[in-house]
Length: 152
Image (cartoon, rainbow, N blue to C red; front, side, top):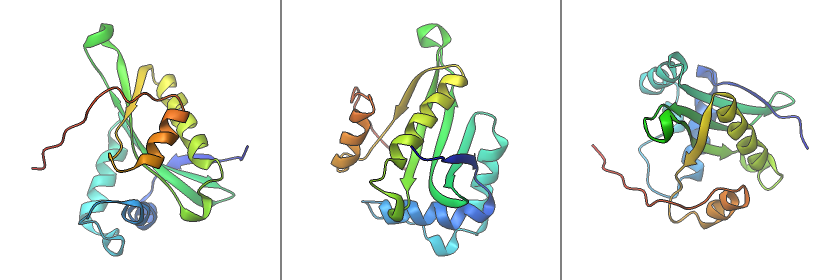
């Protein structure tokens, strides 16, 4: 397998992260990679980096950015106080897709959650992303819940 390395996202990574997210979005978005160095994105990344239960990570190989994902560690009361890991914003750069990097990133993220004491890892995926659903099922994830959103 490859030798991906992982590091916390820096402000200079924001155009890469927002660009990947916009490029892979299947629904209209207000995000704009051209504005990724703006105060809204900078403040959001600063908040993530300041929170011990949040990580925005960039995966690299040989100094080249391959992908990114966000991890959130969620304390809970049920299941005897079990912590959950939430994986979001999983994106792989187009030049690196279909080469096993997404699976490697996800396996690393799951192990990171396990190391943080999480007893479960969860994620959501848009209902239209059938290829992503097959990918997550191949990694052992089960489609166990129906998700809902309310935009505020």
